[in-house]
Length: 445
Image 1 (spheres, rainbow, N blue to C red):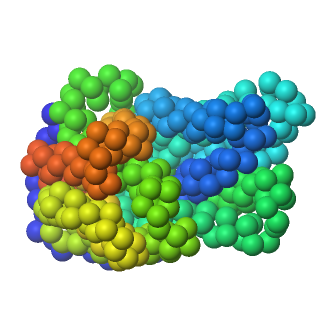
Image 2: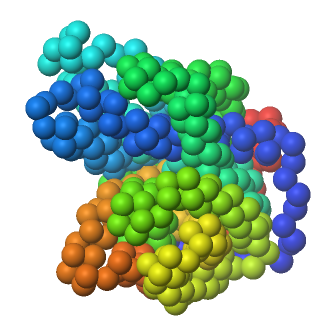
Image 3: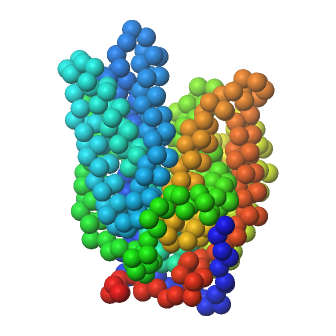
């Protein structure tokens, strides 16, 4: 089990220019991760027609969604693999390689010939490229969080909040790219090649991000290990920090459950089942994204001044209390902009603080692996099954507001986890060992 770090009386300092630089470079891949996820979902109907043509369009669509699911299932594997390599050989080489491979796979999907041209090779290669993306992205956000916490341990809350803010920017860019393509091209051209433009644009973002990320220095805390990195980080993690893994997965539960429903279920549910107009739903989703982005930055900043577990506890408790009434308002055709904004405001408390809490559960030697394994398992299970669970709840209860019970359950798991966080917030592992870290941007020892 992780040792309890001693609290520090020193006030949280300002982030230096060097620390901001590292945090911004580390955040680039997270933006691409969610951009790619949203773009695939937006254009899945066109992808299914080109790579999985069948006489039944629903079968074609199901096959395309299965490819998306495979990417999700590959994330825990990628988290274990890349997290272990990052803890053993350093954050920098893994972080650069994962973004490079993700970018290549994104470009390859944009250029991949259709089934009509290449036959069976086309869908098989699409599956392979999505698996590469899933494996690499399994280590992307955990790596960014690890970098941010180790570069700015005294401002871990704000640094991690900024990482998640950039993830939201990736979602916003995906939405804007979709709008641009839909307005610039007629529907038949969007189906024929417009969707490829979105993937190629993501590839351009990835190339720029890769070029910038190559300028990253190694994490200060990893450098401070002085060659004493773990030889078997996964084995050490499971053996010595099993309890922390369970608590970390619980902390991430509200993030996984809420995001899984918001992006994977709510748009179609609001339009098809509750009868909201598509433009109103799009405006509501955008408003929710803006509110959440502002709120999580504030929550991350607050986590550097008050215990982060208290913020998580309040946020998850408020979600349990408010999510059912808010969903009932949606079922009664209240303003979708208002309701989704209120839901996202409550959610932002947990969204802004969870990364720093996860990072501080694990010491430097296994931090990358610990974050990657716990986060990816939670996201794969709770996000991946969220649409299915919501549909089953509606079917069994005949209540349109029933999906709120799923979010409430996930929030309750995070509420439970907030009482089992054993490391003090925002204190680097090195302080607990009585060592001093070089500042971000300082010469390496």
